[in-house]
Image 1 (cartoon, rainbow, N blue to C red):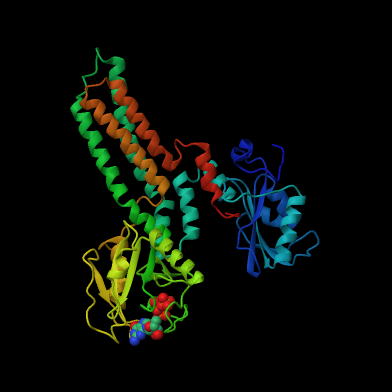
Image 2: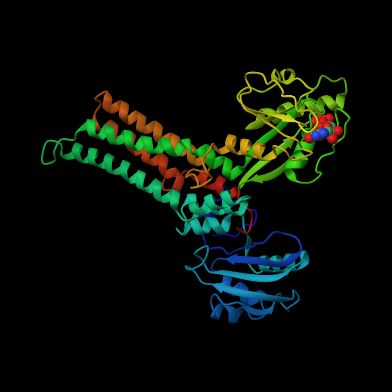
Amino acid sequence: VEKNPNATLSSDPNLASSTNDTIIALATPPGSGGVAIVRISGPQAAGLLSLLHSRGTVATERPRELVLGRAGVAGESGDALAVFMPGPRSYTGDDVAELQLHAGRAVVESVLSLGVSLGARPAEPGEFTRRAYMAGKYDLAQAEAVADLVAAESAAAASMATAQLSGRLSKRVGEVRSRIVDLAASLAANLDFGEEDLPDIDMAQVGLEVEEINSTLSDWLSDAGRGAIIREGFRVAILGLPNAGKSSLLNALVGYDRAIVTDVAGTTRDTLEETIQIDGLVVRLTDTAGITETGDHVEQIGVDRAQLVAAEAALILLLCPADQDPEALVGSLPAGVEVLGVQTQVDRLDEAVVWPEVITSHVRVSAHSGLGLDDLRRGIRRAALGTTAVGEPPLLSSLRHAQAVTGAVEQLESARTAIAEGLSMDIVAGELVLAADALGQITGDRVDQDVVDSIFRNFCIGK
Ligand SMILES: Nc1nc2c(ncn2[C@@H]2O[C@H](COP(=O)(O)OP(=O)(O)OP(=O)(O)O)[C@@H](O)[C@H]2O)c(=O)[nH]1
Ligand SMILES: [Mg+2]
């Protein structure tokens, strides 16, 4: 394969499937720090290690052992540890070499460019994991889990990714898929030998089994929303009239004075996002400008932004102290977003707010005294995940998985309709095969190349 440092994985099909070239990248975050790890994978890994490290040859002779030496042609990049992991027992399945360097920009840059000048190619985002996928170390769902684990911000997100990485989803998908394939195969066998030895198939029975599989998949789908919330976080918009205490509440929840608070109505202009965790759930809170009719151009932009944030949120906290009227805000709420009424400043004004009927759940809080904040946290958590404990992580964690399962459910529905209408067995078998293919998208058993490309594009370089 011709080496082309500008090639992208998607534009050059040879690169996607070839491990003939050797790739190099920084595997740790860029910038200065304690240690930087440069990772090399491919047939030249051993050769490069011996050129990049004073004792690289020793390292290649002692696989998986850290060897101390100096990096650079003449040791100019300082002390470094070298380790060599011969394929196929390596992360990528190829020979892999890693250098642990002093993490300075200049050190890292010089080792990387030396590696490239000696014949390695800068790795694309996710290319190491892609090679692991190509080598059959991971299926597609597991490779995605690597990226999820790297991005996980909460214990719940990490545990979902870990479960997926260990093959939990792949295994369940495989089981369901082989049930479908077996069913299709039995129909096909009956087609071929129908009149002779095999007993006639009871199509009603087939229909029942299809229904059973479909209900399993539907259960997965009903839990997929929870998976997405755990993986990506739960979006909560803080809305209210000016001076309702929105910024004060944000500050109380994040635990420090993040937003400016004054008694001037219209203090907050821009939207302001902060992330908190509630029982291992990542919650993305956005403070907004108070909703008001205003002649002030800047304030008006703030109000417009508040409306946008509200429309994109999964939950709106509608804030209202007893001396304001929540009715004034109900008209401006976006349709279809859940709303939790939050009576604020109850230390100052404790007369109960009369909530409009559409707002069915409410809590009472004081940002100053902390009263009711736990109720509010519980309310947010309930809106995100229902009353269940985070517990067993959901099986489906991404839109891609949910789409594949939805596709399978649709094909299984078609198969059932075909059975109900008494259509021929080959038509039913065809629908079943399509359902199995749809599920195979999750693990990559049946997958379009561009899907693979888009998955690995979202990785960081060096992973
Ligand atoms: N007593 C009491 N006062 C509060 C409480 N929360 C907010 N306030 C006061 O109410 C005023 C407005 O608070 P902010 O948090 O700035 O209100 P806001 O909704 O962000 O206001 P805008 O950004 O102008 O829309 C400030 O003087 C706060 O000190 C509370 O829980 N108790
Ligand atoms: Mg404010």
